[in-house]
Image (cartoon, rainbow, N blue to C red; front, side, top):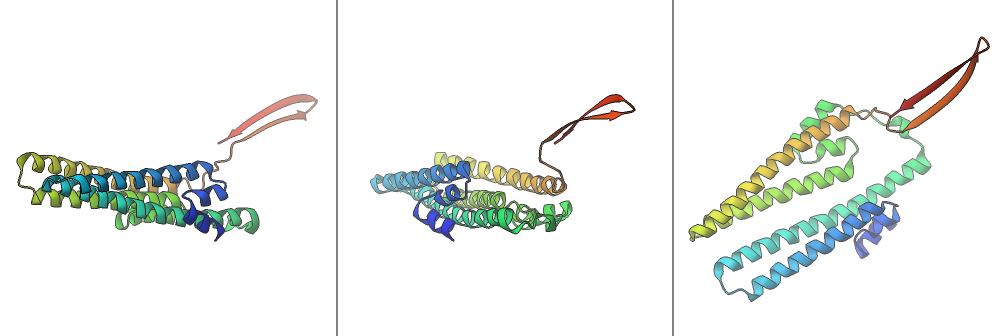
Length: 216
């Protein structure tokens, strides 16, 4: 619980407390950047007197505000789960009881719910990240589609249409990536990732034999 409370006070502090230093900096920079961008769009909205510009600024302000809220939630959950994982690794010693995920099951879960396949594989941070990206991109597509439908200026309609199409293609690509990532992660769940180098010299029949083995 200490990690979660720290992340509430300062973005990334919970991850730093869990010894996830790179992740800590990523959350701190991400939340600070999203907050700054949200404030900039809000200021532009307040200082704009053109209806089309106001719609654009308020739509982006709300989108970035939603991204910021989602990032805060991800940061808190990640700090909590990282603390739980750290305790299991150092105190529980139950790594041998880990279940082996099914590659097909992981891929199907990623089709049904964004990030479910990664969560099923035990990659909780990746699951939250993929879920946030897909939900945020879908929201962006919907917002720009609404702006496209409500706009009466041809140049604005073309601008919003391009942004909507870009978001839709990005969403499709992220879904395909999520499926493949879940499948591959499940396939490699039993792969030994520890780099071990052994060097043995064993005498056999008064002769010497040298064995060098690498395991990746």
